Length: 146
Image (cartoon, rainbow, N blue to C red; front, side, top):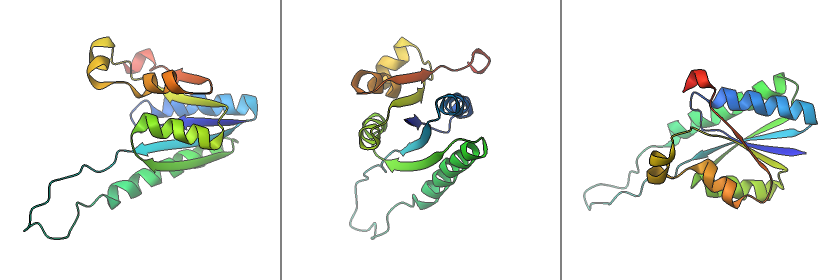
């Protein structure tokens, strides 16, 4: 059984990972921990700007380190885990990875922004819920973290 766990390294990430580890342990499942990096913005180029692109490598390395630490932590807890870092629109990439892995479930957090802010910003968890072809477990924020 494969569980795809989407994390964003917000303060709620550890809560989501703990729930995923507990579920994986109970089901004997493998965790695929995934973080989606937003694509770099396309900036207008000026003739005098030169060939250099804005550096994003350091940020990517930090996110790679974080996803590997999360996978190591899950393995230390006795759960088979793999960390994956991808670039693109979050909901689309989560759904694509779930299809590629043939995931049995997607586990994702909910920031609980409320309907007004959600209408303006959209919600990754809402988009994943609407389009997923497998069950989706949305882990709410604990009351103490709201």
